[in-house]
Every structure is written in structure tokens, then in C-alpha cells.
Image (cartoon, rainbow, N blue to C red):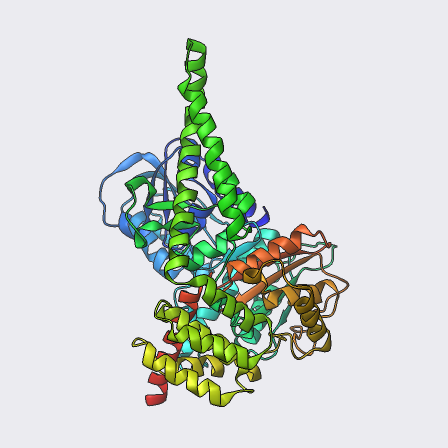
Length: 567
């Protein structure tokens, strides 16, 4: 509950202390923050009768002095300019200004000078500058996520903006939790070092007073790592509910747009998948696809029983009871049709794209050895006309990551076959991935074949067999969390910033992945937290990836690199 609760508390404090009819004015970033934590019906209960975006409300001239305006905005210079214009000709009775992060003194002076009509009642910083998609998982929803792959010389100003935004997001997490962390980063990554150092500078120098909470417990740990240390996880097909929906259809701010995959009634074109608002989803979000189908059948059976009992209305008391329960009945009906639609559509995609065959080979590549068998399996799938272009590309990428040093000849054969089969394939994309995230660039033991203990563990897993061949992969993050729990995260691989070292085992660890998280990783965090080891993990990243987004970022970074090389 920790992250969602923090956001909800901030929004509640904004709304409940201001009585009367209100308009809530947001920007393109804070609208995601609010929509994930608060439903429209909850906003209505707080007397919010209108929600507007700050750029679109600027175009309207209608006076609404009966409404009190609550602005919740990121502290950008663009938003300050919008506010200046709004305050010059006020349309609302009162203005209550809330910003999602630390403001500059100059911005506060600009707004104070702009309030000539004295309509501003308050100006506050509420540190809710992250999207809390799950209780232990947050994202910053960064548009130009590919920037992290580019060296500073390619696009210096955009890289600086990227780093500034990540530092602000991380800062707001710790201000919301009222803690100041000890900071570590991945040694092999320049961008994680830069972000870690800039975060430390903000927390221990520039805003040291703001972060001085005078807490006596052991400081939490912030670990900043690079997505390129585990490029396998975002390339794999997924078989647990939440991760699978994101992989096959896409989730944005806990909403799923079904229009991209078929015709649906208007009220079902966009559905909400939130563990806070949907009990069935909360119980099943980490379950595998086979179990989900059985659990949905059970949900449908329960609904049918309720429907049958509602048909046997005999007395006025029965009717009153039905009317009283009707909103709950409607809610359940919507929930049942939502989950049935999602599972039906995903089943179709699994069949059309032959994903069970594809995924079995992916899992073998990610988890087991056997280069010749892997080469044969990938070649057969490249020749299979039912396999989609994106699946062919991902299979070759996974093979390349696993066997780049062992079988360069076979790898070239796969590149040639991929080019002949896939008209849209961007030449050199697999090679660009190896340049970005190949074995020479990685810190962790991604395939469990460097460290003796990992080799033994993989052999044991191979001998005992796995419960489900489609979910045998574990993200590298799982090993990282294990190392932290056992106090074995090596200083040489993950150095501390400055002279702030860990005094004892941390009770809270925030792991931030520059380049984005996956729902497979957030599941690993949730399962780890459920084991009650005495350490609570929180996962955050620049975006939430699926394979489509990961490949798009890779293509964009490759394009930018080529342009800069040509200049």
C-alpha cells in the first residue's frame, strides 16, 4: 500500500481542507498521478465537479467565480507561465496552488508578483511526482526513454533533462516517505553514476535541510541500476496476468485500451486494471495464464448464481434488497465482462502468433544451455510463417545475447535469415543491442554461467524440472534482491556515493532501473516482500516496458547514434 497510500494522502489533503464546489486543474504529468490513485467517483465525493488540463483551460474565457480552483502541477517553467496568465485575469473565486516537487525561489517570486487580484489562498509543495502503478512499483512515464542509451556527446542537453527528471522523481519518493537514503549505483553504467551523484548532491548539499528528517533508524538504500544489465526480461513473452496484458495489449496508467485489438461496446473500450479497485485482479495479477482461465470461470459461475437469484423477486422486500444491491451487481457485471474480454483476446493472440512454441524456445534461451539445440529451434521458428516479425526479431536477439561469444558463425546465419524473412527489420538492430547490452557491458551474472553457485543452482533446477516451462525465467533483479538480503552486494560492482555508507542491513530498499521496469520484475518484488525477510523493496523506473516499447527505444537510440556519427 505504501506508494499508493502516499499519493492518496496528498490528494486527500489537497481536496478535503477546501470546502465547496471545486475544479481540479492538472497537467499532462499530474493527470496520470491522480488518475492511478483516485477514481472519478471519489473525486466527485470530494466536491470536484470539473477536471481540466492547464493548457486547455487557458483557451476558455468563461467566468466561474462560484468554483474554487485547485491546481496540481509539476513545477516547470511552462506551468508557471500558464499560471501567470490565469492569475492576470482570474476566472475562479479562489486559487489553491499545489506543486508536485521542489520549487525554485524564482518561480515562487514570479507567482507572488502575478497575484495582483489577491486570489491565491495558498501555495504548497506536495511531493507526489511519480505514478504509483502498484503498492511497491512506480514509474516516471518518461517520453524520451531511449536517451539513457546515448553517450553524453550525442545529445548533451536532452541527456541532462533526462537525468534532472529522474533525480526529481527519486527525490519526491524519498520526500513522500520522509527518508534520506544511502546511495549506490552500477559501476559499469555512466548514466547510473551520474544520476546517483546528482541525487546525492541534491539530498546532502543543495536541499540538505529538506531531507534532514532526524530519523534514528538505519538509512534506506537507493540502488540505481541500468536496464541494459538485464536486456532479457523485457524481450520475453509473459504468462502471468498483469505482465501478459501489458505484453500483448498494453497497459498505460493502469488502463487498457481495447480498441487496438477489436470492436467493443463504448463502455468497454477502455478498462481499468488496478489492484486497488478490483479484488479479482488483486488476487490474480501474479497468477499464470492457465490458472487465470479457471479463476475467471469461477467468477462467471458466481455472477450467474447472483443473476439467477435476482430473477426470483417475489416480494417487495426482495425488490428493495435487489435495488439496494444493484450498484454492486452492476459493478460485478462490468468486472466479469472486462476479465472475460481480456482473457478471450489474449487467447486469440496466443493462438494466432503461436506464442506457446515461441515462448518455450525463449525460456530455453533465457534459462538453459545447449547452443546447437537452441540454434535449431530458433531457425525452425524463423521459417514458420505463423510466427510474427516481432517474435522473430526477439528470438534472434535472445540467441545473440546468450551466445554472442560462443557461436559467431551461426549468429551471422540467423542475421541473414532474419533480414530475408522480415521486410521491416532494421539492419544492425541486433548488433546495436549487443553493443549496448552485450556481455562486456554487463555487471550481473545474467545467464547464471559466470558464478559457480549460479551454475550449480541452474543445474539443480534443470534436474528437478520446473513447475511451468513458460514461467521458469527469473529476472536478474531477483538475484540482486537476494544479494541485498544476504549482505552480499559487492561494493566493487555497486559502489557507494560519497562517504555515506550503510550502517547495518537496510529495512527499506528502493531499486530504480534507468531505462524502465517490467511487470515481471514488479511481480518478483511483490513476491519477495510477501516473504517478510525484514527488508521492504520498492521498484521504480523511467517507464514500464513491454517488448514493443523496449524495441522502440532501441530503434530510436540506434537512429540518433547514426545521425550523430554522420555529422
